[in-house]
Image 1: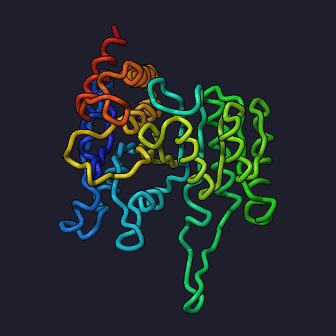
Image 2: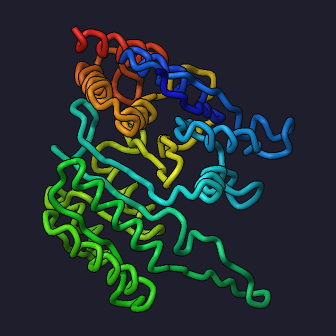
Length: 337
């Protein structure tokens, strides 16, 4: 039977990279029934919102989604569609692998890190208000339940994927109650996984360590804000957001998406790099239990980038978005024999 997947192309460059990603995924031979849904700035006039109810309904029904980038206005306008999706569907775990791909310009080699970021609490809960006219206050929420489930997710992921170590990232030396509770909970969870090494790092030191000796680290589990920052740092170690996949996973629903923006100035030019979305689709295939197909798609993407011919301008080539997607699809079929 076909896997039924909600497809949200998004806006800006989203529809172009989604088209390329679909071509690459379909080359694996995995049967997928795509449920195409509209969201983003382009639909606000028609629906009165960038996130129509039908999108949430489809994700609740299919349980799995592949999503392109959606524009978030800075300082005004609607709040982030990404945040709204995470809250509405309780997508509590944000998964951000950072893996070296030969052919992608980077100062480092052989990076293989995974950031597991708590997605629903911390300062990102959005509980803030003005205090008089000249001060603003934001409330940091950390719960034992939220900390336990994200730490358990990190350890279960490490065990399932054959990872060796989990590092909890915090600032418990200063925020002794909030981050202290996160660290205490991480230690409690770690005790139930004696096969996985556990350690903790203060967030500022963690950033320095990642720049100096990233090879010492494996899976990083972080509260929301630190996870957002550290995951972008890790993406920088492997060449930037253009090659950084992502997933937002809950108990019922999993949504896979790149973490880069919608780059509206490049929309319609068939020139942007589809790698991050294709690698997000690799994570999706693994989630669906299609590991062989996922591995083949990942290898094909690395092979095409490594060859350096059918790649987009940012990777040193002159191929268009769809041409790169088709090249990856062709390589997927070659690897299948």
